[in-house]
Image (cartoon, rainbow, N blue to C red; front, side):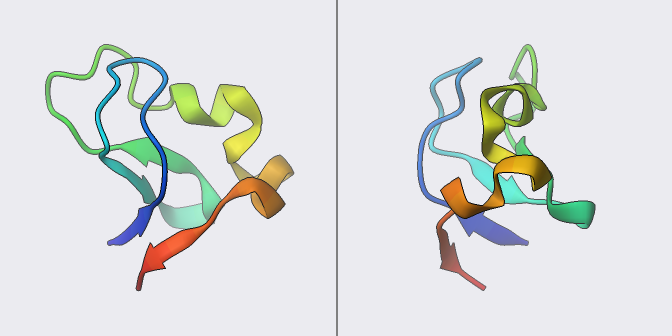
Length: 55
C-alpha cells in the first residue's frame, strides 16, 4: 500500500492511500465515504495533485 499525504475529506483521517488504477482511497474502516478523495480531484484525473510519501 502506498500512502498519500493529506487527510480524507469524509472522515478527516490521515489515512489516504493510492489504490489500483491510481484512485485515492481512505483506509479507515469507520470512514463513511472512503472514495471521497477521488471526488475532490485527487484520483486519476488529478494525479498531479497526489504526493506519494511512502512506496
